Image 1 (cartoon, helix red, strand yellow):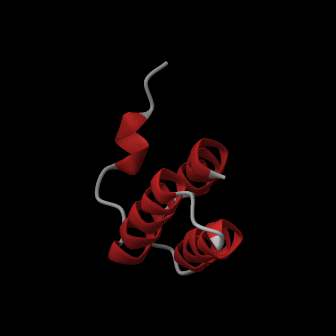
Image 2 (cartoon, one colour; image 1 turned 120 degrees about the vertical axis):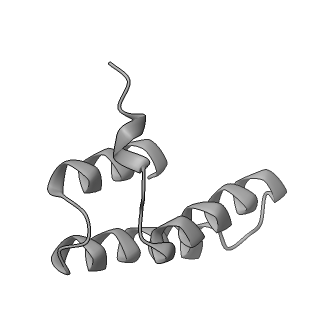
Amino acid sequence: MDKDYLEADLPASIQKAIAELLQGEKEQVLHLDCLSDELYGAINANLWGGCITEEQADYLRSKYL
């Protein structure tokens, strides 16, 4: 089932963290763990702040982390 709709209208902090993680993977940077932690933190902060749903958070974690 296509769940791309869960990535629609994400907060800027999550979009930025995803872009940086993907760029880091592409460039094979040594600090990939830090980029993963940034995304994990952005997901959690936005979840607890009520900006994204639990379903979105779970989807983003499984897709990117």
